[in-house]
Image (tube, rainbow, N blue to C red; front, side, top):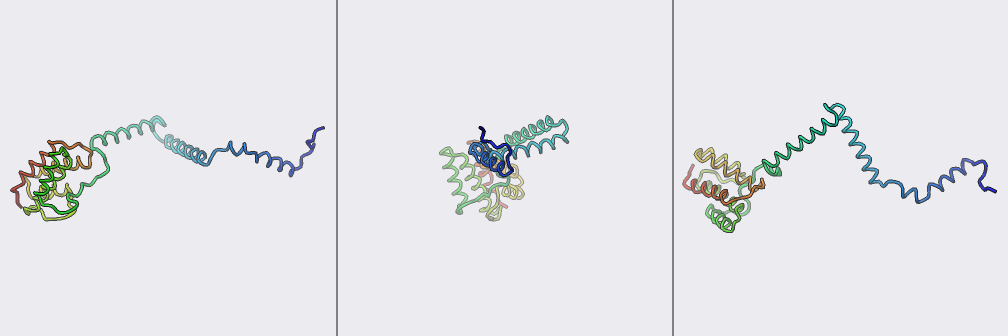
Length: 200
């Protein structure tokens, strides 16, 4: 004879449902909080793109093409100008004060061991310190490479283009990820020699 009552009271039904739902198998089958969060985020992104696509010419296809074009433009810019991590030019001098001759010596030593990036930096510092020592520029800490080229170029117009080129070489090597070469170092060394007698 069956033990199941013909009529189930509300309390008995509630107790039976609670016993059934307390089975660990139900808890194990539920998605974790991380799964729920990911699903919610995907749903929100889908709704956002859906709303954008409705008002966008060409719908989803037009939106996709626009995103591909934006990515392509970013890649082209990145390849042409190098890393965009730093927009401002760097300060010329850091650390203790050295003479132009000290910087030239350091540049030559770096060039001899094949470290042309360091040679470029030290030679640019030699140019800057030499201009200060000869009175072309006032001594000022924190002056950037580009500022130096601009200020010195205004006072020595015959060397303005070469100074801008030297500043660009410095920035491209130190902040643009370009490889320093013996030729890039030699351009700065030649400019340093050309400026050797320059005075305000």
